Length: 116
Image (cartoon, rainbow, N blue to C red; front, side):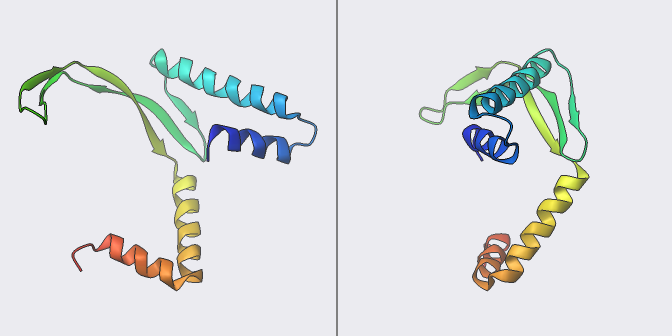
């Protein structure tokens, strides 16, 4: 799902919202989340998951073209941890889809065991 898909879904579910209002709402929420993470805050949405900032220490890497050592600076990167309700919903939906389409189940089992 893309940002525009989210705007379309929001506008479709809530008839009183115009497309422009839905776009503004999505932009406002995502901007607020980005600002909070940039300030180092943690975001928790019950039933969905939590966003936090992980710290990556500086390290030495290698340039794959010529093998030279390259200093990689420290970074702060966003991290998402899904909530229990989201994990269970995805698991149930995946199981239902696999039960409906045997060819999908076969493909999924091949992905799970690539050595066969």
